[in-house]
Length: 438
Picture 1 (tube, rainbow, N blue to C red):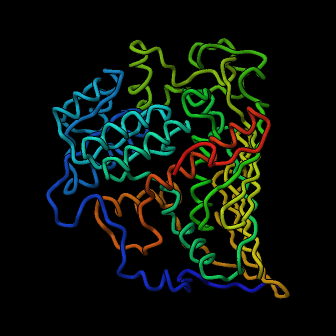
Picture 2: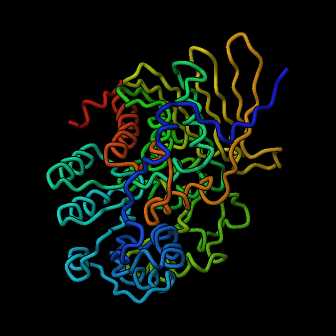
């Protein structure tokens, strides 16, 4: 027998209850003059989430002063799509020198994030970066060292933290409702639409995104680190490439030029999205980059199926899996504690309509199951995008547990993925302490 509990306002811990007036410092103070804002990397994410949306919704808080991309056509296309009149650049140092931004947003290829973060930090600019913070251990160390040297903290934009349902999970765990957490079971599913898209782009190469262990899973590792209040200590992992890359029986340069369009289940028509056409198709003569590349290109060197065991500083162990060729999209996570278990099932996309997009329940030892009503989470990334941006730019009031993630959070998440990737490559467990000096 189950009972239904409405826990929309479930807050029990002293830390959360006492935080009503303790808010994370925003990058833009309330009632301040607009901050000078620049972006390096004018691709889909840079011009959308960190471009047009900010230009449309944060006009009083930000003034766009510069856009930079190694592809001059994409920089100009991005400027037009964002709808601003600021200058564009292909030389990053020149942009910083001429525009003197207060805030820099880094949305370049993941493997280059550290280059722009460290330069911005050295010049005293408030730097924000897309996840993952970096893709290699040495580059993580470079960011941490630069931040320490110049005493200029950065922000890593982990938007998944800011989904109301994810805040709710954090509050339940912090309350002690299921006792001391002992282990976590976490499975993330990328479907054959979203998952395949990583294999069309530069993400298919470790040299670009560090593999999905780093580019995608950094989101998930950050959530777990935050939820359980622990740091990763050691990782053992396995991975395979089962569907994409060399597994294809036929292949072409890209979908547009493919002679197998009518028979390939992974065929994708980029021309249906004119925004992507302007950012990529019309700019590819500069750098040769195909946004609709074939998912079966043989140079793919990442995994599409991954499993890991992660040990944490507080004694928690996590079993984690990520699969990028599923018939559905979403995740399932369970927290096992000394007093019970919290389980969450999240549906993002699937070939049926679920009764609820998120299911949440607690089962206490020797007691019945309690169905928890999840907080409403609408908008991109479970409602996290808008709340995070409002915290950064409008100084909205959120509990202290919702403070902006810093470079340490960025390091702990990407290093979990780097350790997992290294574990596969070297066939051994890898300690985080081997990778960096904190």
